[in-house]
Image 1 (cartoon, rainbow, N blue to C red):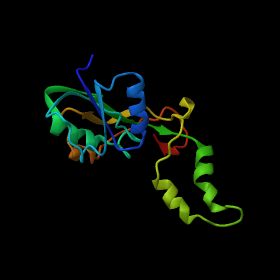
Image 2: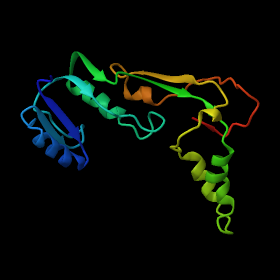
Image 3: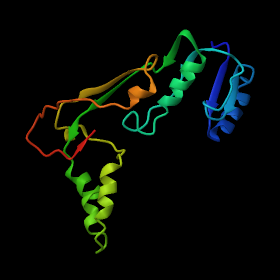
Image 4: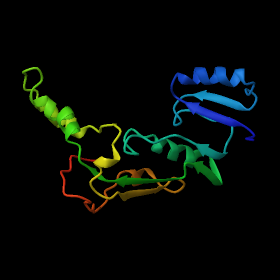
Length: 176
């Protein structure tokens, strides 16, 4: 039902998207633009809706929210909408000794070599994995609320006091 769609992507996947648009005879309604949002110009002054899948790991790590904020400030009409328009980041603690052994203790003896200096790097890098619900040790608490229609880049650099309440007597191997 959109009057016209302007789709922007910096990657080469836009070539496949163009083929899909043509195969479905929608080239009169969808304009694909390859480039960074900050570097391109739209053929219109304003848009009514911005839809973006900007979330990164741990919501903001490697995210593209600053790009959405740029597009919002440059093109979104007053009272326009953004999807998604809200985001909440939660924090909880887990017990998972096998992950600790596999990802961190592993570096103490790699085929007979002490490679423990790599542990410092491993501890700082986020791990993307599936967490079994049984591994949760604490409640989950919100640590960041974002309103995408009103937030700014400075809101993305945040600190948040939080308090986790343990549900059982156990080790804590990580925060998720």
